[in-house]
Image (tube, rainbow, N blue to C red; front, side):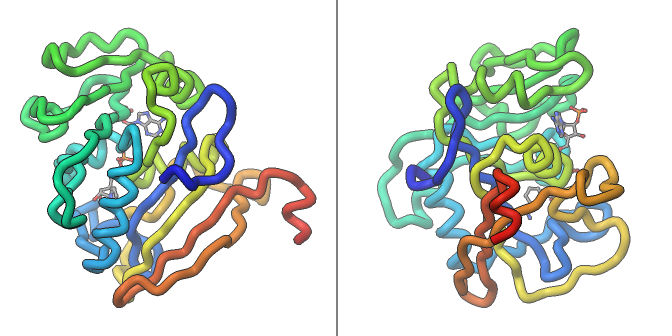
Length: 231
Ligand SMILES: NC(=O)c1ccc[n+]([C@@H]2O[C@H](COP(=O)([O-])OP(=O)(O)OC[C@H]3O[C@@H](n4cnc5c(N)ncnc54)[C@H](OP(=O)(O)O)[C@@H]3O)[C@@H](O)[C@H]2O)c1
């Protein structure tokens, strides 16, 4: 991930990555996990994880999928290397006690909002950032201060929406699987508040398109300047 462009002083370089159906869904109805990545994409994702200092998800993903957020070195055909921190956005301490991210097998950071009374195992670092909900503008500089300079955001829909809308990202990659999920309750790539006009939408610039096994990966960067919009 070292090649990710952009970044801002005082916050990590942030790379958002997800796998979606052709109609832009991250999972099946009601958020039931869908294994959308092709084998080639799984390797690409592990490569991204391996070159990150931290891998971030929302508590919704922890509850639905119970991911390990570990680097699967066996998929890379390499001996185990550095271990990125696992970071969960969990304002009110909803992470199940049995969640794999709390198993102590890798450094874990839980970001909470002020006043969260939940206690976590001693090996978990708790970072309070935000009043009623985790505030990314507070959290990302704190993560940077903890040595997380390359941050991979893996989802889910609410977290991706907040990261994109806050503008605190440098690159978005979406693996599109050749499948249509449809329906009304399957989570989209980005959820969160409604967009009512151009001002609410997040303009992006396509910077790469690559076949990845049966699907393809599209890479986008934020349109940072108004002149960018006119290109
Ligand atoms: N295909 C893929 O690549 C992929 C990857 C990951 C997940 N998924 C899917 O995504 C779905 C989960 O997505 P989701 O939208 O339900 O959950 P999510 O985005 O993983 O987590 C959302 C929760 O995170 C907490 N949160 C704390 N601070 C936040 C902030 N600043 N912005 C946004 N959220 C914040 C909120 O709970 P509190 O208010 O309690 O803090 C919020 O409800 C699952 O179906 C999973 O399978 C798919």
